Length: 125
Image 1 (cartoon, helix red, strand yellow):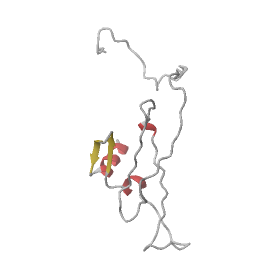
Image 2 (cartoon, helix red, strand yellow):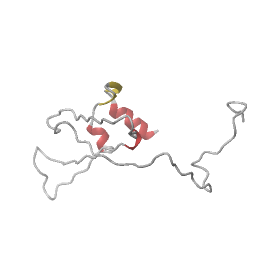
Image 3 (cartoon, one colour):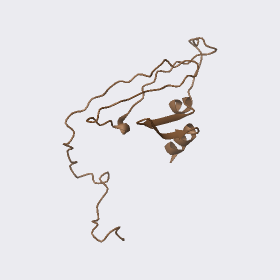
Image 4 (cartoon, helix red, strand yellow):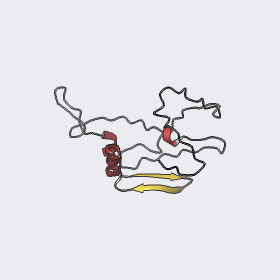
């Protein structure tokens, strides 16, 4: 086995070392969950836009960001009957959006017109 660098050490992936006591992360003094609501109601195909602003002192953990969505299934814009059978497709939330754009400091960092396809591929791999 070759090492990347002469001074590099051989290590075991932390996920595989089941007998090791995990380290405690101490730099984070406190954490909080904040709710951010979209600018406008989602109707008639309007975009869902959020603005999450922070101060220079706070860290926003983008990997911990969650989207809470309520879904109502209708048939011809009316409620379903009690005995009607309904099944949703796999990856319902992914198939609900055709495009997702993300910006940081008003700078576009991702734009994907094929968002659903890319996410399905990443879930399968």
